[in-house]
Each structure stands twice: as structure tokens, then as C-alpha cells.
Length: 371
Ligand SMILES: Nc1ncnc2c1ncn2[C@@H]1O[C@H](COP(=O)(O)OP(=O)(O)O)[C@@H](O)[C@H]1O
Ligand SMILES: [Mg+2]
Image 1 (cartoon, helix red, strand yellow):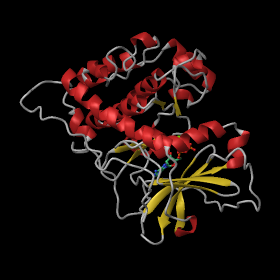
Image 2 (image 1 turned 90 degrees about the vertical axis):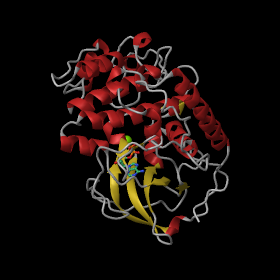
Image 3 (image 1 turned 30 degrees about the vertical axis):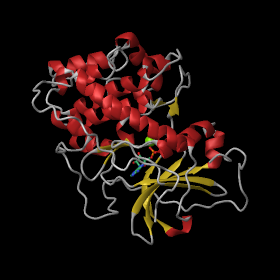
Image 4 (image 1 turned 180 degrees about the vertical axis):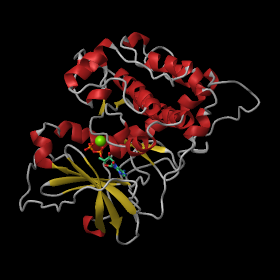
């Protein structure tokens, strides 16, 4: 019913690592990484095939009922949908064409759509269908029911170390996959990380993502999470995502971000100076990892140096994390969100509802011709 004919998703996303159980060691060996890279090359191939093909959908817009709002953002809102025939639930991101044009986000939104259509990884959301009408464009994704990491983090104040490690390892694997496909993400933060019903993560919101060849200069993201090289308009690359990962790592373990002030300008000053303090609860391994990731000098930043993600995969703080078990979701999640039934949205905050009023004529037709 929901098949998408022109996509060729891999039948099985699981990663078949050779059994290394006889080889007792800490961390991830070069041999394991080489084997994993073969898997990533295959995923990248599949990404590129989907990137080139135009998807077709076997579902119509009027088969979907809107249930309630799950989240709002600068350009629109995300709503819970129910497919009337199958009873399946989805999350629909609704974007207003007028706002996108006014805020000069047409190119970003086209990247968002095409990237969402083409990515397939255990820790990222992806597109199921997309539509447009006279006034809006709609991206329909699987509904991730556990809510935002943000909500759980604020409720728990900070994450216990095993939970922070569990989440951090998935974010590293997701960024490794995205960068391998030449995608720079650019908006890593707890609001854009969702927890699914199994307790594993899904990164959502590819609104600032793009395919990166060489360097880029656009100022985008969220103040507390911006990398120094981005603030300084230096021209930057994938390094900005590893910086944001450092901010996330700190925030998950502390309960607040490392660089914070009342005004964005003051926050930026602290970021470019690399000035932060770790709470006394951070152990030496965690401090060392934070220091190497929140590294203003990108030639010394973890994730960007010659060993790439191996600097993370073999860091002492991640001792005990089995990377192959994580990528296959075979590691028991330390926290499972409450979930009563399909379509249960109680993990999401309530927002005022709004009825959509599409115009009677097609607005901004030429700007959105590729959508
Ligand atoms: N697939 C999804 N399942 C459930 N909720 C989602 C999903 N995608 C987004 N959301 C919710 O909607 C919010 C806004 O979506 P997002 O794509 O981040 O929009 P914006 O670009 O406006 O920030 C998210 O923070 C999250 O709470
Ligand atoms: Mg967002």
C-alpha cells in the first residue's frame, strides 16, 4: 500500500560484522572499522541511487487525517497523522511556502526534502511521502513516539552516564553516516533528536543540511550549538557537526549547555574564546572527551583529524560500548519512554492547534517547481 516504487531501500539495514568474540579487546579495532566502512560504502551507494531517482507515492493526501500538533518551528509545524485505511501513524512537517520564500530558505528546504528522501540509517528519520498544495509543502515521516530528547533531558535534569553514552554513541554513528554521504547536518541539538519506542534515537530536522563539496559559509544553526569557525565566517566543513556534538555531549551530562549568555552575541564571544567550565560531576575521561571535541582549533578537534571517528570509538569514556551492537540496535536501551498505544503522543508537549487555509490559486509556483 505504501510502497514507494522507485526507491530501492536495502532490504535489511542491519550490519553483519564478522564475529570478533574470540578477539577480546577494548574499543574498536582498525579491522572492525575497515569492515564497517564497507557497509558504509554500500549505504552511500544506496543513498546516491535514491538521490538521483524521483520517488512516486501510492497514497493520496485525503487518506490522511490530522490528529494533533507534535512540534512547531520557524517555518511551520509538525503534526501527527493517521492513515485512515491502514490505521498507521505518521509525522507530517508542514511548511508554508510564503514563509520559506520570505526567509530565503527555498534552497535549504529543497535540500531538506531530497536528503530526507534519500537517507536510510537506523538513527535518522526519513521521508515516506511528500505533497504540496497551493500554499504549503508537506513532508511525511514515520512518527517517532518517544518525544524529544530535550523533554526527557529537562525532566531528568541530566542523564545518567550510561544513558548519555548510549545516546552519544548513536549520534556519532549517525554523523559518521551522514558525513560519509557528504551531508553536513548543521542543527544538532536535543530538540532535533527524538527517542523511538525502543529507546533508540532518530535525528530529525534536516532543514539546514546540505550536500557539501569543499567548504561553505552560510550562517545557520542554533546559537548555543554554533561552532567557532561558523561564527567567524571562516568557511567551514563537517567540523561544525563535531563541535555541536561536543556541546550535546556536555549538555546531556551537565543538564545545561557549555556556552550560555542572555544575548546571542555574548554566547558567541564565549564560544570563539572556547571558554567553558565542566561541572565537578564530570569524571576525567568525560572531561578529556569534552576538551578534545570542544576544541576551537579544528586541526585538533576529534572527528576531524586523520583517524576520524576512531578517536571517539576508541576513547576511554566509551569503554564498554559495543559499536556493532549499537548500530544493530542489539544493546539494551537504558531508558524506554512510556508508550501506551500506536499514535500515543503524550510524550510531546501540547501546542495551540491551527487550521490550514490553502489559497485558491497556486502561490510561488516557480520557486517550488522542483518539490
Ligand atoms: N518524525 C517525527 N516524529 C515525531 N515528532 C517529530 C518528527 N519530526 C519532527 N517532530 C517534532 O516536531 C518538531 C519540529 O520539527 P523540526 O523538523 O525540528 O522543525 P523545525 O525545522 O521547525 O525545527 C521536532 O522538534 C519534534 O518535536
Ligand atoms: Mg528543529
